[in-house]
Length: 238
Picture 1: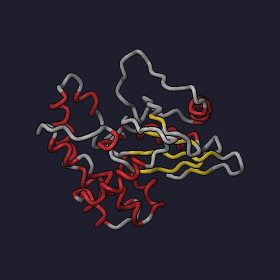
Picture 2 (picture 1 turned 90 degrees about the horizontal axis):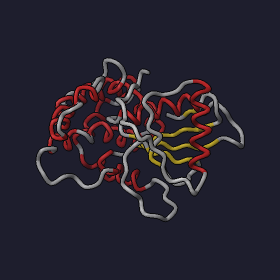
Picture 3 (picture 1 turned 90 degrees about the vertical axis):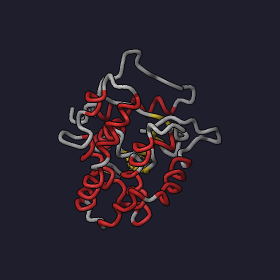
């Protein structure tokens, strides 16, 4: 995704690090797309796997199948980036939409796994990810990209590219703290995790939220803001 609906010297460069399997990141992407229609933003997308933000793999075997399958979709983004960098944004949106919008592969996942143990949640996700090859194939067709890019799902060779994308998050010489996605950098400034949104505001609401977000991240003293109430399930279509 590269949205550029306003030109001029005041245009802000925004970089969003993504993983297609994350519903929260998809909502953030939709919000940025809406904000770019009412604010002078140029938004670009970089793929990185959740695993590279979340630290080393667990040593037990209970997540083995999930960890084997979860990097698949984002590896395809890495392969597409190597072939044609401008294809990453549209391909990310095509894959994420097929995961998280109504009728998608992950539609209703959060409600389905509520109350389950961590191991049980991963088992449910792994079962769904078994079908991700079809989702990715459809997205490649939509974006007029070669079908053979889907083979990257099973190819660890792309993991170095994803680690490099992870390491490219600006940090102003400081240690990169393992967090998750979405991660945003504004104007090349230090990356921040979030915002985490239940649904994506549209129109001027998206612009107002952008104004508030960009003001916070521009303040060097600002560190964190989080609600004290439980996080509800994401509502990408909301």
